[in-house]
Length: 114
Image (cartoon, rainbow, N blue to C red; front, side):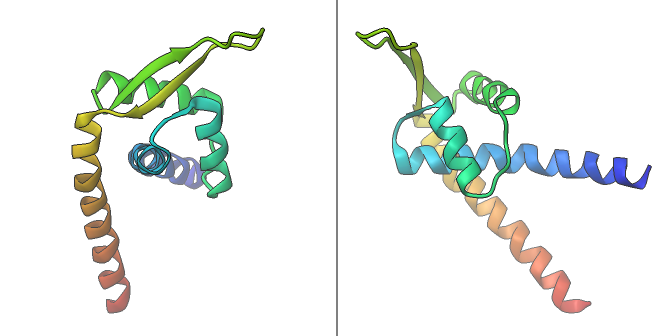
């Protein structure tokens, strides 16, 4: 039961920072498609699968943080949906980074008290 509670807490923590991580990657890359984004996040140590990433991207798109478009290759390749920061996403990113850093700083200060 204790492990279940920890997993629920960890899941809630991840939900918020995954959005931040996607915005950061897209700021750096300017535009990319889902599978490439998944690879970059995994390489950074953020373990993620397609079943988590694509609903997250759809939610962020619905929130207005991302713009997307499809590219259909001329050869027989599969179409790819590319994502980039929307104007709202560009505005949201520094706010989210600031909030994340404030929380990280508060936790560090608390750790110094112990």
